[in-house]
Image 1 (spheres, helix red, strand yellow):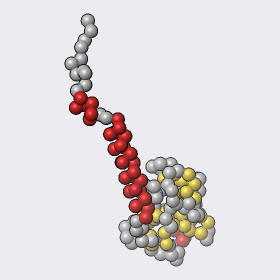
Image 2 (cartoon, helix red, strand yellow; image 1 turned 90 degrees about the vertical axis):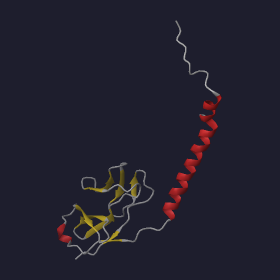
Image 3 (cartoon, one colour; image 1 turned 180 degrees about the vertical axis):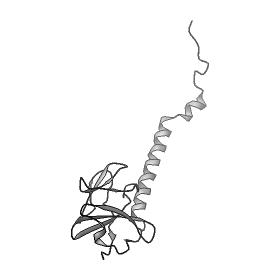
Image 4 (cartoon, one colour; image 1 turned 90 degrees about the horizontal axis):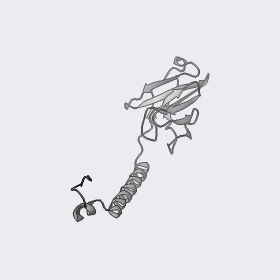
Length: 142
């Protein structure tokens, strides 16, 4: 015996609620709003430069990285690349703000959230979703 489903045929009111044209129109509007929001955020005021308190360059060995707090509460990632070169960048990934880590074995900065990588000296994007590189931090080496 064939079981009959009482929910069919679909009522006209329920069919209109699931209209494909309306769904695609709303999805397109949502996509446009997301793009507009992203562009507005990129053009918006950027935060002030990240300044790290004076550091003793001997506190890091060559190839070692360390997170330090700035005066405004943000974090910077300091890395000693050579005996006379120390770099510092804002620790937030420019893609979604995840904390960037130093990878001494690869000699680069990496974001674990979306597998992005940044060049050690300049902070430029090597690969991954970020459109811009890491923000340099101003450091004073004592």
